[in-house]
Length: 316
Image (cartoon, rainbow, N blue to C red):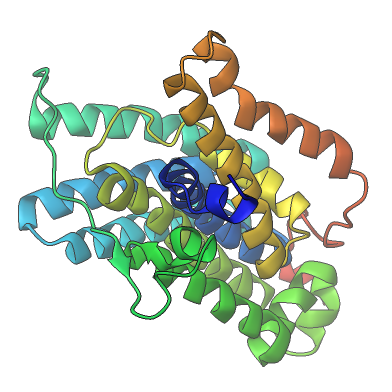
């Protein structure tokens, strides 16, 4: 079998398709975290925002019968949590790490209780029909790229478009310059007429929107159901993706695909009957996260004001 024949084999094509599907939630959360961190706020609460987005998105879609309504509801719920985090970290200058962890822990309980209150405690979990894959005419037959990019659900194509939009916003638009200025030197930005608190608040809301969309993708496109703690640490992995991708949209896309590939590999390893305990395979993406943190944590320059609260009266 030639290399091209191997890449077009159904097993390899399924692996490539799963790589993208598993990368998308992490990619969305990392994009949201990028806006917050570029503005100087460390959003540890990505995990909780994703989890709430998954629950609210699924519940809204199940009740309304509309997947797109579920997507909007999931994004809105993440935005609300972003606003809550902005209230504590921007307005009250609370510790950003503590607030983020509190949101994560709270959402585990809120979503678990909310799901049981809404759907009961029976063994048959409610399901919905997820977004189907859409093949792009003329591109769906390209080897390798076809299963990787052109045989995916509409939310995958939306995410890839959002990556491009995020890159344009940061590098080509004045709002991107303002975000970077607030993250690097908030005192100077305030002097130039850029509201640090408003900029950071909006960046946290956008961060919540992206993370909520990532959570909604899990329940509305990847699985069609909601499970307790179904994000399974993806919000934390997104923080590692930020380092590996150097807080740039295109770098985040490539880094997320790497982690998606590791996740797809461990899933296929479990089904291949290799004899390796599945626990070792499951921990592969998280082991990769640790390696990334060790290898890149000291090599990526953080925004100068990252994690530092800002009070306007100190700048005057």
